[in-house]
Length: 287
Length: 179
Image (cartoon, rainbow over all chains, first blue to last red; front, side):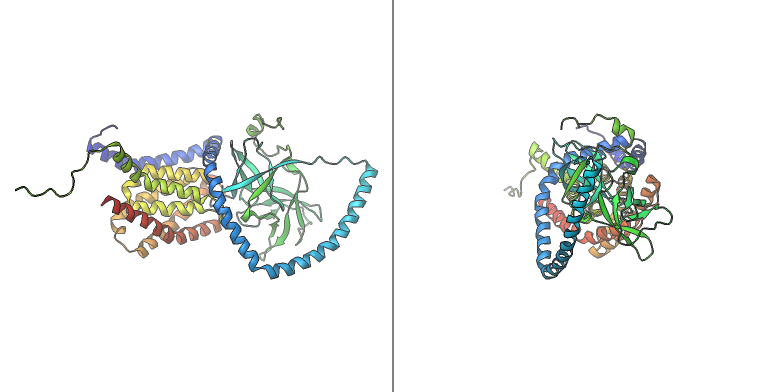
């Protein structure tokens, strides 16, 4: 250890706070200037902490499950009534769906339709909240052999969750659809009108930029649109809801507040990604 | 006759003692970093990391300032900024300023009752939320919504008593061990 004289040490101690405040401004500038470096630092830290989170996830998940179990037991009567009603409704829909399926198969045969290939996907566990006060993101634990890649689309068991924005060696960050920087091109299923779903950090993202005269209606189903080559068309997103103040919002199918496991789909689309992340060699050929 | 010697003479600073002293002085920083990592575990409430960071730094700055030096605050802030998607450096600046201000008034604060310290913390948290909002707006060049700031402020002020209770226990235990 270096021995310093007491006055010198005192002077250094007094200077350290102003100097560190100055370096905080330096860090801010660096963060603005070199976003790639910041991204790499973020993923290195996330990779390093991933084992801790994976271990902590077990007891936390057990507690969460117990709480959910208790809630279901509490609501079991209401839930039962709701399910019975829903089951009746779905039975009617099943008949319709079967009729439509056979009709669809018939039409496809007549048109010599080439079906889309089924997309590959793998599942990953959500282990940490990767957002913050003004951001909504989650960190996934990805196994070593799993080819996580920027631009992959994340879905939970119900619908669209977000897309992969940062990839580390054993973790990946998914920017959720509710994040303030999220812009998702969508189609309103009834009118086939295109629009943009804009995140605002709240639970329901807003709709913007729909074509004139095709106002989104309450209850319209919202699916992704292939515009800009970032998503395939037709992934389920949510349902249109109008707020009391008169703004259309999307009630997402995905339950973003209780994400456990998400499916990552690789559609091979590279729209909107910055060029440097596309140009990098990707471990896709090994599949 | 010589009077009997009471107590023992201080043993020379051996390796174990040095490790012990080092661990003790690093304890608050390690606890804070541990809390940040734990706060990132998803429990349904976003923005917990910042809500845990500020009260912990505030507490240790008042009650154990020599174990929470500015470089440690800097490291904590950097970890916080890297784990969240906040603009890099904003959390560092906020924590360092809080540390500096509290250091100036800690002589007054350390003798006050819990309720008054909580009140001061609430004032600091309001200032911090306002500054964080302004910095986020400035660094990302778009006006952030105010609801998340309010939400986070509420969690942070509400969490303080619980955190302070646990940290006070740790602080007392350390005082007892040093006495």
